[in-house]
Length: 430
Image 1 (cartoon, one colour):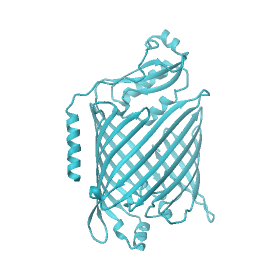
Image 2 (cartoon, rainbow, N blue to C red):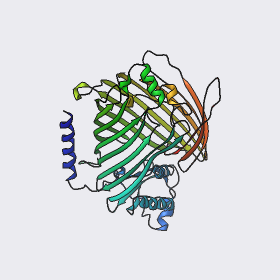
Image 3 (cartoon, one colour):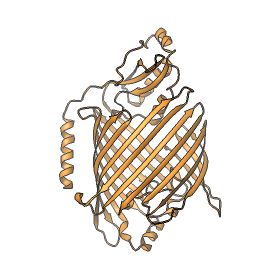
Image 4 (cartoon, rainbow, N blue to C red):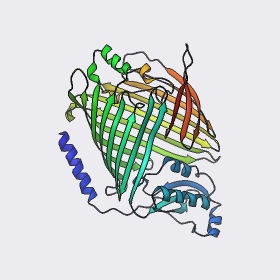
């Protein structure tokens, strides 16, 4: 069954790859040119308009750094400035290795507002390198991930290396290979296939906890994942991803034995940015994920995993405020890599995930609030992880730090009654 599904999906990808690349689709806003921005007089005329929104035609085709996207959104709500947008177009062209980047103006919903759309032209072949995660935690050590990406037309090939002791219970090290078809008949539909091969290493606390539960079979040494997916842009900022994850792993104890955990995976995502009349910039993102493992797919595990997360960010001038929420529940028996974890570099900062629960849990609730002024950051976290039938022990932490060009250096303090302890966190892209 699993082999048939994987082969069928691969055949679908191959068939789509053989089709000619569709032309770039312009913004759905039906652009109406306000003025020709290439002349100084027209730039002066357009300066009286307020920027309603900033977008990119077909953004899923290109890898654009988060800092560039943030700089674009920071111009929403301000008066149009041709020089600023020309500078952004040049930066985009440099990031995309020589692609020609132009921007067009169209009328906004109000008479005195305009929409700005960046259009990317030129060769669709390019190579890029990204560092999506690089973080040091004085309790858990160094974690990092690096990706190399090759773009060929509407196809993207990604090869990644990672060593991560931050996101899950074991330290996970290995490779990730991914193929994305960025347009399948329409820019709203995207297909992908990912293969992961990981080796797991366990902290002594996890091994002791597994032995105490008389269940060493939960520890596995190697894990592979085969995951075909399809992503559909439903409406505006709402997207839906659906696929199947075929996880195979080799148990560490009591003997080397192969097991599988095969699940249907769903993710509904929403991401929207806007500006208010006072010059404040807002961004709200949220997602709901559902994983269902069933014996129908040949899985040795049967479980249902629900998770909801949301983030709201406000920025005006030198001040910023951010709030984050995470909640989740698992019904059934899930492997370690699906269980919930708190106490790392992004959740319940300052606490040790092995102290909270070295085997992970089936329930989680977490909230965070942070305030920033210029480069200064202060944050407060609270949350708990537990299993069904257990009592809930809510933990808290607080910290301060500085953030410069996406790099954060912070000191976090878990709130305890018996002692004061400081944990150093440093890294980028979080």
